[in-house]
Image 1 (cartoon, rainbow, N blue to C red):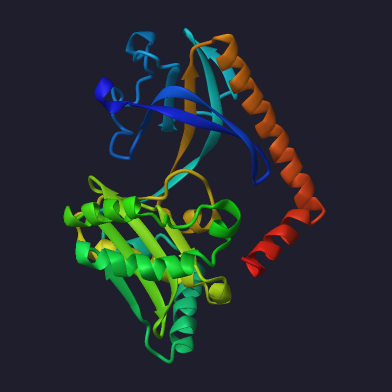
Image 2 (spheres, rainbow, N blue to C red; image 1 turned 90 degrees about the vertical axis):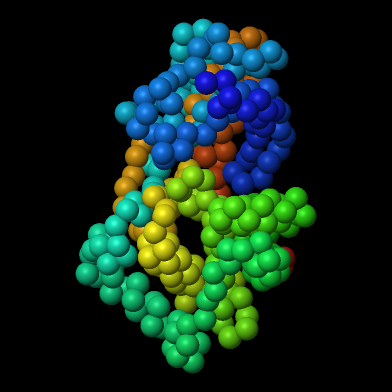
Length: 313
């Protein structure tokens, strides 16, 4: 069981809306619970104090399936339990045909998606150009094209959450591709890349890691077009069991998902004064950040800042 845990310094960011003010960390034993483990009671059992590694202040469980909403702060045996995020985890069951998958959509939604694909195809002069990158030799070409799009995106300009641009990340992608564990895609307008999707594969699960698109093509729904094309290929190739949208919720994820399950990020920490102060302070700051973000949205301040960043990257 201990081999499932990774001992890391887990950061706790104190943020005001999207802007990080300061950061502290706790040394915790971290693990993510994948879709393949979710139905195994032993795999998702809460850890005990006897499993603490030397120097560890507790445990961090990501994507923990829960039956109901959990209180944000509570005691759990010898630990202080902190639940900073609860959400509906969206995923796609790939154990069927693409034709069967399409039946999960209403006729109106199918018509809307097909209309978007036709509209973009017409924009491109009648030919829809996209490419799948899976071999190690294709990885540099994918990154060159995808990075040219990523640097234009709101995620990278404002949140520093674009496709990573480091030699280490590219080498990791090449290693994944060498084992057949990479699915990466680019959508083009002629020779111009306009959207990318990067999906590492863990076991039989394709992970929705990075999706980005050129803001100039937002009105053409290029992210939706590429997602649809990539899913059709994944269904048709076989060998993949799930497409995992990971944590967080969005209209995009809910649209394409076939299933949802209630999940939470759960931290179990030693109830020392420092740990309790850090956890409770983070919870208070997070609540304040949500309130401040809603206030900024109400007066249009955050939207103005985002538009400014999008226009002056």
